[in-house]
Image (cartoon, rainbow, N blue to C red; front, side):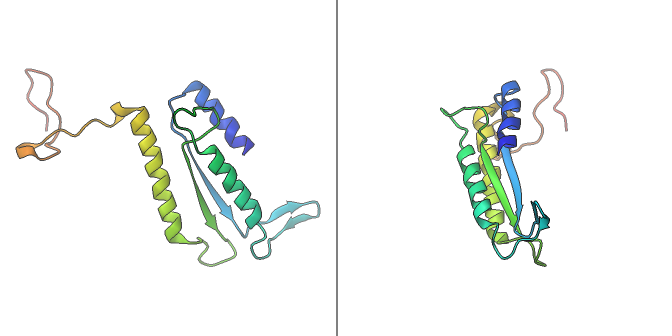
Length: 144
């Protein structure tokens, strides 16, 4: 968490308009370092640690007006895996849903902050959208 806050704060000091998302992959089968060496987890013993980490991410994922504090992010996505299993991605459907919500939140924040990056769609022929490339400068034929 400390590294996340520090790195994000550094970026936001230089570019306050930046939209930041954080992705973490948490492995329930990952060994932990102990005094006596590495120890592989048994069952879900890492679950309380991971839950506390995710709660911390939730607390940091609230950067929107009027809360613009440096070190906050617009969103996070946690992917849970278990490297001890053959199908190591845990709950694939929920993972995809959370990933889509994460990306939607980032794009939404970017649309609000930098609207010129998302120009309004021009009407096409007979009122349809996407009539091809925009016209060139006056006196020049349209490209395309």
